[in-house]
Amino acid sequence: MVLDLQKVSLKKEGNWILKDIDWQIEKGEHWALLGLNGAGKTALLHMLCAYYFPTEGKVKVINKQFGKDILGEQLRQQIGIVSSTLKQRIYGTDSAYQVILSGAFASIGLYETPTDVMRERAQQLLKDLNCFSYANRPYRTLSQGEQQRVLIGRALMNDPKLLILDEPTTGLDFIAREQLLESIENISQEENGPSIIYVTHHIEEILPTFTKTLLLKEGQVFKQGLTNEMITSENLSDFFELAVEVDWSEKRPRLKKK
Image 1 (cartoon, rainbow, N blue to C red):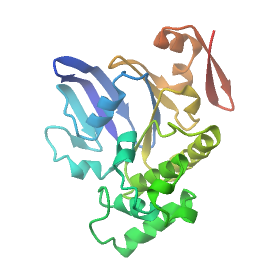
Image 2 (image 1 turned 120 degrees about the vertical axis):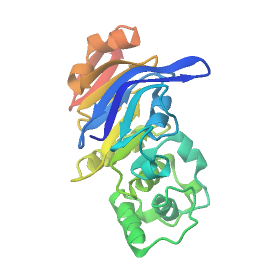
Image 3 (image 1 turned 60 degrees about the vertical axis):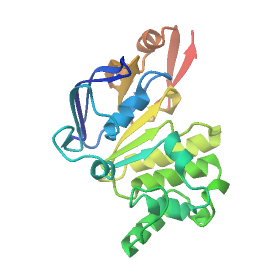
Image 4 (image 1 turned 45 degrees about the vertical axis):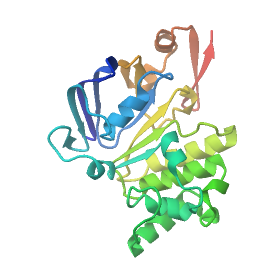
């Protein structure tokens, strides 16, 4: 099991940020995590990466149980993550190739000498993610879509068991968004690839590969299960507290107000 949360709650500064979260992810499953701003998504992700520890409940990520096993960098090296926070920390002067290589050490910037195996892995990721043509360009000169591809490459350097993509299409135009989603779909189909958690508040980004969905609202699980059972007009009208209609086209949902 990649992820096992049992009755997990988190209190910060006297307020409950998360409450009674039950969530299990089996190896090979890909999930969408859907929630509006302020739903607790970021706090939940920080907990999965062992930056937060639960106030109540049990957390087990990639066979590491919080409170019993050694966590920190040892756990985080098995988790690939792409987030806006990470994007802001990357050194703009580093090349795309260097940024991807830094993922081997889970560091911001390169401070150790990569092995030949690491270099070969980074070069292959540049090719797989269609980044090879700008491998030597400074990260800061890349478009937002190109930067996101590089960050995904960085996240995949250590062959993680779990890949967390936190709103990766933010700021992308339609073409760049669809290109990035296609790359994510390809990653999800790789044999022995990571389980993926795709975090969003846009249901049109939920790809067919995300066969399960968790709806997070006000720090609690609103519903979870098979995506085609979660993403319905009735469920989302209740979830958003607004009458909406879901249309499915080419196995992807679209949302509109009734």
